[in-house]
Length: 403
Length: 155
Image (cartoon, rainbow over all chains, first blue to last red; front, side):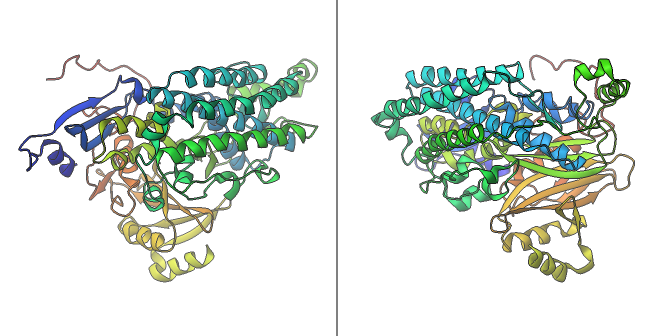
């Protein structure tokens, strides 16, 4: 940007000095990954800021085009790796929309449950790391410890902790394993106490409040202008939550509140995320209490592969199994946009099918990409230490920014 | 939503085509109209630009679809705008001055597809290195293969 370049090299009329240009990152611990922020500093004040991204670009959108529809799910895991399940969610919903199938209620409820567990896990990582950015070391250990329980639950049902690929087109990898419900309830009972612990650690901590309150505020107009979604937008007072406004996967069955704040500063963002964890707990409890019995994937073998035992008995099942795993699901030609409310905002998938077993185009709208774009607005004329607070409050995952 | 679309058709006539695909509203328009159409839609409450992307339809002429997604807060719905562009240097007017969020989205689109956004304040690569050759998401860009490593030290 020509304007930006002049700011970077401009001489301050008052002091007669050029601003100092420094790079924050790409290896700085507070940038939460490989983000590089180019800053022009006048003393400690930020005169210009330019985030430079792309260090973690892995060509996910391109690679999806060479995988079958179900194989591409594994790549969606690797974008927002702190909440892979919500990435799976948007993608499978999109493919199901193209196919014109709807999964049974039980599957929808299980999906909701895991999406909310991932939301808590993602917010916990955010809480721990941004507290660490502010110099508070202890919350990190406590949040990671609770996240561990969620990863255990995911491992129990999906077999993997970090990149589970649990949701499949037309269903799930498998039904809930025995003993899952007890373990989940133990977590639900224990977690509220820990949430209070986090509040106790931070909410009366003068440094935490001093550094967060009034830092990097964003008005609702600005937030909308920059395409902000998720907790950031709600902290600026816009009650946009896709789970309420555009319910998917039976979210309309659940009773929960959309958390909003009005201040729009870093402190408001912290409060929105903390209270969202409580709302997520409410949703998970309702889902496990009212979990319907019955099928957990779409009937027939055209979309969801037949049971392994069935293959040994039934010739037709073997044929379908072979077809599905060699050619993939035949998805009718068409275009669809499908979006879910992820922990960081709207995760949108624009899917284009040409009628073959592989996607023609998979476009991912990563919320972090759009949220990060507003960083220069957040830190303009603030001090350098606030840049760290602002980056922390955006809650970026570079895997999703760079894809 | 219906009302806005009727007004849109009233204001732009034959130049816009409104259709529906899988329950989602799609508006097709020529590249030259994009700025006036999004300005009109923004004034009617489409306060968020959700995404800009493109699709390379290699065999078709014009070759690319540039796809915009807008969101209306009161109507609680998305709207998809589609613009076809082609030629040796495909280009479309930039809407970065209408929505601030278009800035990076257009840069990514340029980086990945080589579509130029006329009037963009700073159209440069965003994800790929500045000296990269080719635009990876084009269908004629090879999916596998090797290329020499970039030099360790830049002059």
